[in-house]
Amino acid sequence: MSEQTIALVTGANKGIGYQIAAGLGALGWSVGIGARDAERREAAVEKLRAEGADAFGVPLDVTDDASVTAAAELIEERAGRLDVLVNNAGVTGGMPQQPTTVNLEVVRTAVETNVIGVIRVTNTMLPLLRRSASPRIVNMSSSVGSLTRQTGPGDETGPLSNAYSPSKTFLNAVTIQYAKELRDTNILINAACPGFTATDLNGFRGYRTPEQGAAIAIHLATLPDDGPTGGFFEDAGVVPW
Ligand SMILES: NC(=O)c1ccc[n+]([C@@H]2O[C@H](COP(=O)([O-])OP(=O)(O)OC[C@H]3O[C@@H](n4cnc5c(N)ncnc54)[C@H](OP(=O)(O)O)[C@@H]3O)[C@@H](O)[C@H]2O)c1
Image (tube, rainbow, N blue to C red; front, side):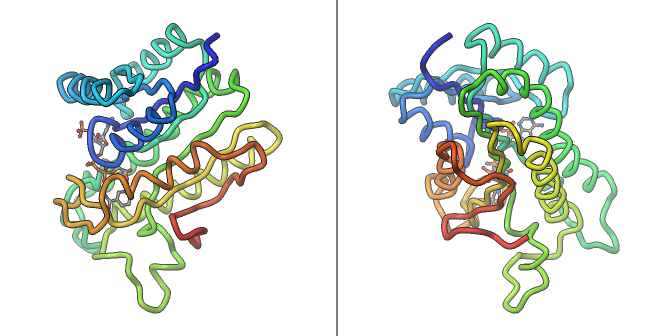
C-alpha cells in the first residue's frame, strides 16, 4: 500500500470543497475529488493537477447508495485504504424556509444530503478508513446549526431556516454519536464551521474566501493522533453546540 496519504473530499468540484482538496493536495496527498457531475468533476481535477496536486476524480452522489458503493470500490482499487474523509457536500435544500410555510421537500432535500448523505458515505468508507494508521473524518457543518448561538444574545445565525440550519444541528448530533462509538479506535471525527464564505450556496454573499473557509477542515483533517474527537470547531476555536 502507498505511503502517500489518501483523502476523499465530497462536493469537491467547487466552493469550499475545491479549496479543501487544493489544500490537502498541497500537502502532497493524493486527493479524491468526489463530485456528482462528470464535467464539473473533470474540470476540477484538471485544474488541481495543473496546480500540482495529485488529484483523481471520484464519481459520487452522496444521496445514491450505488454511487457511494462504487466510489468506495474505486478508492479500494486505487489505494487499498482511505486516510481522510471530508464530508463537505451540502445543500440548502431550497428557499424559502419559513418554519410555518416550508415545503416538506425542501426539508427532505436538506436532510437527505446534509445528514443521511454523510451517514451513507461515512459508513461505506469506514472499512477503508479502518485500514489507515491515522484515520480522520471531518463533517462540514455550520454554526447556523448551533442551538446555543441561535438562542444566544446577538444571534448571528442568519435568516429563519427550517431545513438547512436544523440539518446542520442534526449533523452535529450525528458527529457526536460516531465519536462515541469510535472512542476506542484511532479514528478522530469532528464537525467544522467554515464561516460565512462566498460560494454558490449563498449567492456569493459570504465575506470569507473559499480558501479561508477551507482552513478549519484542513486543520481537522491533519490532526495529530492525540487530537480532539467529537468536537465542533471554527478558526477561532470551539463552536458551542
Ligand atoms: N458557504 C458558506 O458560507 C457555508 C457556511 C457554513 C457551512 N457551509 C457548508 O460548507 C459545505 C460546502 O458548501 P459551499 O459553500 O462550498 O457550497 P457550494 O459551492 O454550493 O458547494 C457545494 C458542493 O456540494 C456538492 N453537492 C451537493 N449535493 C451533492 C450530492 N448529492 N452529491 C455530491 N455532491 C453534492 C455540490 O456539487 P454540484 O456542483 O454538483 O452541485 C458542490 O460541489 C456545505 O456542507 C455547506 O453547508 C458553507
